[in-house]
Each structure stands twice: as structure tokens, then as C-alpha cells.
Length: 107
Length: 120
Image 1: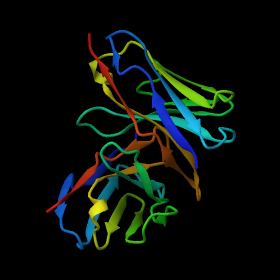
Image 2: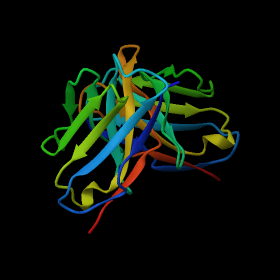
Image 3: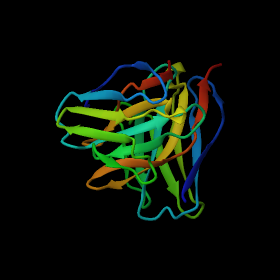
């Protein structure tokens, strides 16, 4: 299985800040990397697919980059609704695997 | 817009079979894959497996011996059965739709999740 290492596990930031979350894979997955946002009690939401493509309807303050084994999710100018947990997921091969999550909290 | 809703018992006894159903509304199941994902308390998300609308399946090898995913397109639903459960199977179970996203696979629609506890 492809192992996913996501960091940090938690992050405190303020509204208006820019934050970056990192995901590293145990082998090259080219650009087969997706990012999701999950708020408590809500369905997870696809943000970024293919490492850098923005899902329809997702605000442009979200962006993704990377290829191979190192990927990042950036959120520019944090909004109150962005405080949630974020997960990366590889779709290069089955079994699909996810990062452990990054909980983004209000400072 | 396609929506997914999980349903099933919230409490299952050890050694018994966990059974969940995901109802698909707002769209057809045809030509799509359908998947189950879970998250045990304090742990990460784990992909369980998927089924194509025609019935072809792909399971996580770590669970393969215990799981069955089936589909009933006439009812617009698909199901998960996990046998011989233990406390380690306690989790929030999500159904989700994997689809082709510009050359890769992404889960673009998710249910809200249902909590299943394994306890006597």
C-alpha cells in the first residue's frame, strides 16, 4: 500500500492568514493526489483533484501543487468556514489511501 | 445533484455481520462506481472498496476476506456487509462516489456518514 504522511496534524491560524498543508507519499504517484475538507457532522468535500485542479464551486483561495511524492494544499486568506479538517488521498493505485488529516483551528 | 445517504444499525455485536445501505438520489447509478470508506475513532480514513454499477468489485486487501459490496440499481442503492466484526470495526462509515477526474479518480460526492459501534 502507498503510505501517506500529512503534516502538520494540527494548525492554529487566524482569519486572513495563509496556510500550507503538506502531504508526502511513500512512492511516486505522479499527480494522482486529491484533497478533501471535512467539517464535523458534514459530508467530506472534494477541494482539489489531480494535485492542482480546483473542483467546481470551490473558492479560488484554495490551491494545490506538487507531483511525484510531495504535495501541498494552500489556503490564502482564511475564512471562518475554512476551519475544518483536511485530508489528502492518493488515487494512483488501489487500495486508495488517505493522509491522517490536518485539523485547522482558529487561533 | 446526486446525494448519498447511509443507513443501517448503529450497534452491532462482536462476531456478527455489519450491514449498511447507501441510497443514491438525484441521479442515476449507471456508468458510475460506488464506494465505501470508514474512519475509526482517532484514526485516518480507510478505503473499504468499490463496486461498478454492473457489479464488478474491488476490495481493500486488508478487509477482502470479510466484506461484500453489492448494488441494486432498481432501488438506487448499494450495500456493504462486513462479517465477523470486532471492536476494531467501530467507525464512521461513509458511502462515496469515485469518478474520473481529468485522468485520475476522485471521490466527488459523499454521504454524511453513519456511526457504527461494535459492542456487546
